Length: 134
Length: 198
Ligand SMILES: Nc1nc2c(ncn2[C@@H]2O[C@H](COP(=O)(O)OP(=O)(O)OP(=O)(O)O)[C@@H](O)[C@H]2O)c(=O)[nH]1
Ligand SMILES: [Mg+2]
Image (cartoon, rainbow over all chains, first blue to last red; front, top):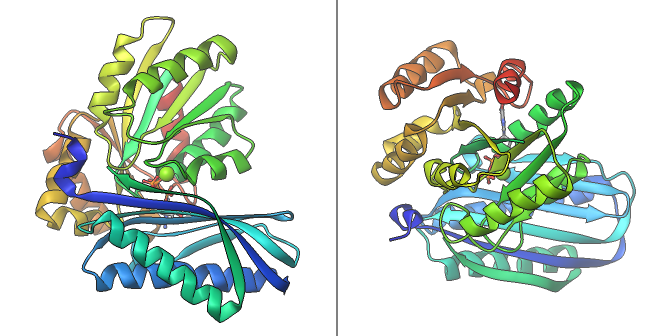
């Protein structure tokens, strides 16, 4: 038996290219990222999962941003060196959660990204994704 | 080439600790490399570590404590041949069992010195995790073979909580050295860096 099956940890990750039809300021990047993490976390909690770690990395031509949470009650941590307004960026998300099926983690992630892309009017092109069973 | 594991549960602060230790170790003129194993093919940690200009190799697509042990042995061997660092810090995934990784490091003969198993304990969420039956069992398995246990995030917990954790961790693993650190603001990291180097 695999050690990890003991704690039913599952993961999902994806890498996307995000494209806006206008320039996005560093502070807008910040709030979009915050909203993505917050919404994924909320949905995981609504589905009775325990968050292992939600991590996000954004790369733009002027810098990068990293963000994560281990649970909303411990807050969302965001560090950013993005200094310019830009209209596209690469977004990587890696989610490990406990007591939830991997398909559900993927579904929650994709639905959240769909919702936020509609709200902020951006398109997203999937570069890579994977289903991970630990 | 000395190989040190910085292990611990998901989100305990392994990557933050490794980045902070790397700065201290580099100041002491030691050549350093980092191996990160995140489950899945779309890892985040290696990219962040790379942003700090550190030499990092990632092993993805599984866990190095089980199906990817061979990749770890290969990566270590390759680092030794082509980069020859003084110290390699390995960050296993948060759901890895550090003792299994240690067993395979022991099997590599070529000029590899096995350093301590350091397990980071999350001082902020540790109590909550230990209240969950299954997680608690798992976390104890991670801690039981540690040489050093570092209670992390002490910047956000009070003295009483730290004392409580110290007693709890000593009961789980009486042989480990227990340190108190904040990877975020640097408390206790000089001492931990010395233990990595020596
Ligand atoms: N307050 C506080 N937060 C910390 C400290 N160290 C790490 N963190 C935060 O804890 C979270 C997880 O840190 P990471 O270093 O990514 O943890 P990790 O163990 O590498 O996580 P995984 O690789 O996903 O298992 C991040 O939000 C960090 O900023 C600390 O000393 N104090
Ligand atoms: Mg990490």
